[in-house]
Length: 348
Image 1 (cartoon, rainbow, N blue to C red):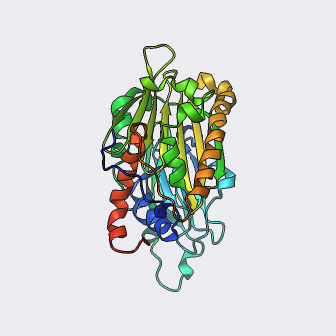
Image 2 (image 1 turned 180 degrees about the vertical axis):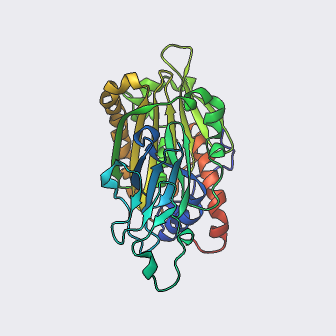
Image 3 (image 1 turned 45 degrees about the vertical axis):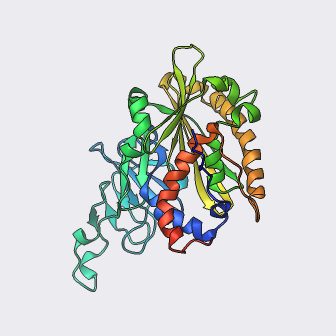
């Protein structure tokens, strides 16, 4: 329940280029980011992805370890693979520029014409640049910074509330991605906003979540959850908010969805939605995703309208008790940004 002094973030933080730069440096770098469904990267495969404009190369070695590297050869920075390639079976990574060859663990095996370098050449001095990489909830998570918070801390409440659901091995059912013309924080706030569901989604999400009087909020240090009774009356549909811009949905029937809002520019972001489930439900994926896309389209109109309204002179109204999850996640964000705000590096 918001306190009497509770307030939303100031609109200035949704419109500033300086803020966007600091978010990448001091917020995005402290957290883990889902990039691929684990089942889409079998052993002996590699896959290139982009995360906040950073080229990343994932590898699943025959030793069973999933790793992440900067997708650039240490010699002249050329990428080993491109995202359009998808998951590719390979035994070695060969740079297409000068032929430097690595194993799937990032160790340099050979460089073309090694005896002819100007200075004595030491293979061990040129490994691939390692990024943090973990597998949780059937997804591969990557850390951009050198000192991220532990992933299990970031997932504190889901691990506490639904450990069995996160431990299941799920397969991809469907994927959806689209650009939104709004700051990522507007889209993120909206997905944490339980005040709007009955009004804005009367025939879609509201029917799934049920009467507002049955809404239950719970809060961890990092994550929060909206729990609503499921159709069987004995279980709950859980919607977790996870910093910095992720939302984990767990259905009692074994489905899992992850929604994220990746910053693109100050007034645009990319929404990505993964839908996972038991292997026997693969044929239902597109129909199940279509249900989600319906209420996400309703939200798109709202968040893009809010972006236009967050102009000069706007001040947000008071928080409602059903917006407590927004305040919880905004407090985490503010704690990471406040030192830089106080230093004057963020325009007031």
